[in-house]
Structure formats: C-alpha cells, structure tokens
Image 1 (cartoon, rainbow, N blue to C red):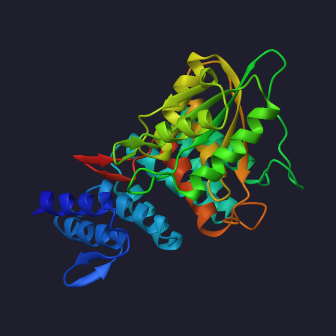
Image 2: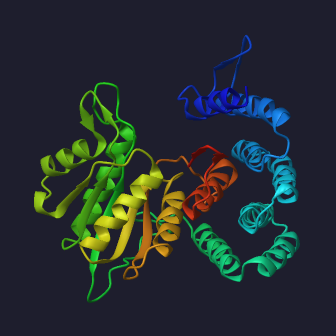
Length: 328
C-alpha cells in the first residue's frame, strides 16, 4: 500500500495533465493529487522524513509557503541524521528568505552552522546569487534597460538561445521565433560570438535545437557559429548540458536569451549550477524577448516564486524526495 501510494504520487507529479488530473471522480491539479497520495503514505509511515518534505515542496510550488514551512519544520523534527537536518534547514532558510523574514532565515542559518559550516556557506551563496539576479531589471536589446555586453577583452562570448516546446507538427511557436529574432540581432552586434541553441524535446521527429539551427541558417547566420545542444528535456537540462559546451569551447561570458518571464530563472540556474563545477569562471547576463509576459522590471508573483523553486533544484534538492522514489 505504501509503495503504491508513492507510485501514484510520482505518476501524478510527472503527468502533463496539470489542471484536470482525475482523482476519486474529481478533476484536480496534478500537484493536489500528489499531496493526496503522499498523505495516504504518511498515514502508513508517519516517521518518514521525505514525506512531509515532499508534501511541503508541492505546497511551495502552489505558492502556499506558510503551509510548506510547517511541513519543512516537521521534517526537521523527524530528521535522524545530520544530512536530513541540513536538507530541512536549507528549505526553511530559503523559504523564510523568500517571505522576507530575514530574522527567521538567519536563525535557521545559525542552527545550520552548528551542524555543517561548509553547507551553510553554500546556502548563503545560493541566496546571494538568487538575490543578485532578481534585483537586476529585465534587459532588452534597446530601451531603458538595454543590454550591456558581458564580453571580456580576451575571452570568448556565447549567445545561448533557450528552447521552447514545438507545435505538434514540429514547427516552431511564435514565442520561440521571437527568441531567434532577438538572437539574430544580437549576433550582428557581436559577430565573433558563438551561438548555442538548446532544447532536445522532439515533436514530429524534430527537436527544438534542430529547428532553431535551421531557422538561423536560413536567416543568414553562418552554420559554423552555431552549436546544437539536443539532449535537454527541461530548463535544468538546458543549463547543465550548455555549461558543458561552454566549458569545452572555453567561453568566458554568455548572454541568455529567453522570454521575459523566464530569463531570470534561466540565469539563476546557470549561475548556481556553475558554482558546482570546477571550471574557469563564466560571466552571465540575459536578454529578454519584449513579449509582455512580465510587465514589471523585476520578477514578481509566480515568476519570482519559480525562481526560488529552480534555485533549490539547481542546488541539488529533489522536488520529489520519497525514498526509494527520488526525482528532480
């Protein structure tokens, strides 16, 4: 029964049916279904560390931070090892910081430091990176917050174009074409820059990266400038696989191109994942599509929430963390 409840929860978590998931004759969000099945499991194993933790993660995804904090506190109380304590304290620190309760965040950092100083420092760096990026206004090719080059005098620069799901027939959506048009203009400003197209999800036998590369070539960009990353199936993969390319090509600075509601998240992923790799430093900035998806200069609401969620995932904390079922 316990294993089946966990399997049901994981299936719901992975479902593409986000808003009309069938549950006991009702239609709910898939995250609500995850919580339902995990609550079934927790009744069978109330001391399981990962169950309240994962329920809290689902609540944080839905913006229910106050409820999530109670779950993380429960996980801290049920922790039996220092590693489990560190995981719970990381969540408590980060989400209190998100709420603007710096006093509470500092209190948990103090507890944290008594257990593991090195890990505490990593969490502080996580928060510093996240805050630094969130305080940067949206940058466009022109206008009040225009893009400033990150090119180093003696280093390579790359333009990274983040993928977006294709139409069912394999053609590109307008959102993806908008990103390519921005990249085309930027590539003219920086004619020596490499161009990385990242996205491996296929529709009708065509991947995002294939379609992006083809569009760029058809619009007179030299094929030798374009590097295709065709393995990524989500934004974290985009960052992981692209970082490998940047390191191989000895890139020293890069500009990330994506939608206005996505560039801060993307930059946070690149910055945090970069800190986990032993390689030459790479400087990142972003260039947003002027698509109106974020009307403020800085991320707010769900967009800001998603930035913190992705920061934690990039840090290495699985969203679904119920042994033996663990998934980012």
